[in-house]
Amino acid sequence: MDLILRPFEPEDLEAVFALVARTIETSYAGVYERSAIDHFHEHHTRDEIRCAAEEGCTVLLEQDGRLLATGTLVGDHVDRVYVAPEHQGRGLGRRVMAALEARARRDGVRTLRLAASIPARVFYQRLEYRLVSEESHDFPDGARLPWYKMAKDLEPAAADGRSPAASDEGLEWLVEEP
Image 1 (cartoon, rainbow, N blue to C red):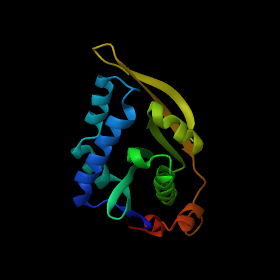
Image 2: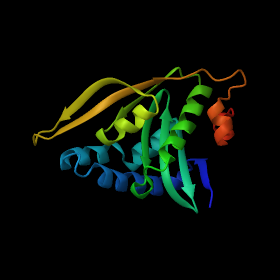
Image 3: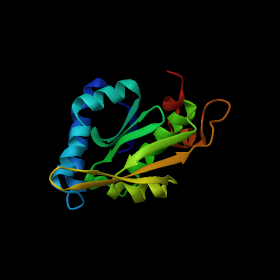
């Protein structure tokens, strides 16, 4: 069946929360200590997901009614890009990022920014995001959470507000005026 990329709806909250929580547990195990993983969960609560979706643009990538990936754009910041662990490495994250970049171009964003985890850094580098700085958060139990500030300069949208990525990927709904 075909992949469907669509905007977040309020009734998607539980599915997005579950995907993010499961992906954090699976993808960060063995990379980060428990206190760091708990910190990721605290950053991706239902309220945070809902508020970001209301303030910005959250997209969902589905197949056969199953949520496979999601990502959010708020202003010039990309957040909460997660792909179900069993579907990673198949280009789904790249499709979510193409959608968010198309929307950012439409909104006149010149530089996109994001915070990348250790496992996500290479993914973003392949999408031409550059390392801005290496950061870390230290926890009272002695654990550290290393992460990376990254950025990408975007080509301006065409005069009609569309980007080649939008027309090539069938993302016209993302770049149309709300």
